[in-house]
Length: 486
Ligand code: F0G
Image (cartoon, rainbow, N blue to C red; front, top):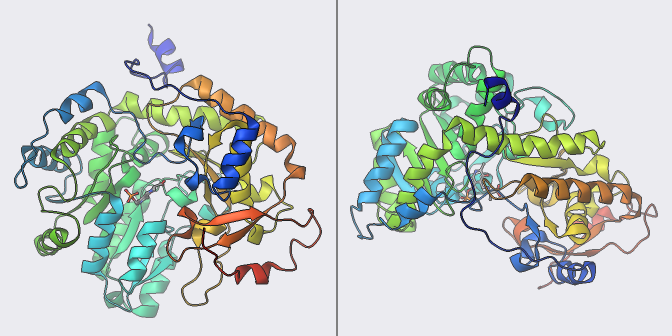
């Protein structure tokens, strides 16, 4: 294979398939019943009723034969498991943080960090929010403040680093409330809610200089930072010849610690951690983890899970893995762009995000266009996606009103190493078929609304009024809809 040929096929999978899981295809009638029973919420579908599952890339990736072999090396001691030390070594080598506190998954780490670092009345800036991250900040008495660049809120903006922090917005906050009320800035790689958009190293360097000057720590949400490193190598001048591991290390060295949902980048089905360089912070986290997660050498994971994660770190930083992973996402995204489907640009890291506002411009935001589109895509072809819009954004804790985010998206999220190019073709065809009949699609009413992270368990019914007649007039009433039990 000559170099040119290799480059041309750069995203072909760097593995072959050793074991398969059979899929079940359903009829349209079966799917219509299934989605009705699920309250038009794809989170409430049974996985058995799903053909191609693009709900999330979280915990859904395929482990390698080495990771499976690692499970057999689980040292299930209550304390001091050898797998913990293997994991600690891998985190120190690739992320570079000195101290590690394992947790059962990402939100476990967010819980610890929020409780330790945030005092009531504090403000926590972030480059857009993530649902669980913001909720833990709020439960700890803090208020989240969005400081991402404006471009991130515009699905059509092709800015190469829509995950960047707007230093002007950050500085305005710091001037208004004082640096002493900003316990840290939360910095996410490949910003999930923005469409999987990366930050640049130049932006992080500026942020680092600003935060040093004001004594504000930078806490990384490291969930998809390895994918962010890949984009820096592709797009940022001066990084084309650096390895993904070198770039990852450079990112982490400019930050003070991280929370991690290992279920994404790190190719495992469960796990997470908190890591940092400051000893006092570490001691607090190490002490708190025993209250909420488990002893500080397992934090809610089995020994075997920690071993699979340690191996996953080594596999995740491999160049050919990331080229294939992100290459597959871009393959799907380009197919949709070619067909004229409105998606978030540039195509991000872990998912293709349909722009539901442009897809269904006739559906009022309080009739949940993204939720509606996700349900339609399931009915069309058994493809499960996720709403990332008005339902996910929830209500403002001060006003109690729906937040009405600018981005009203449906996420087609690709698990790592799971589906093939032919599956991507099926997905593209299904989206195009739904697009062709978009005019016939109405909205949904929310009939059950849980208090926390409502998108996971909310239930809906089809909005009865025929399209165009009054989808605007009773949006206020809907916002006050009384929750009824499922
Ligand atoms: N941070 C980011 C950026 C995430 O995407 C997630 C999870 C978390 C934190 C929380 O981690 O699930 O391990 O507790 N995202 C999943 C998703 C749920 O589908 O995007 P967790």
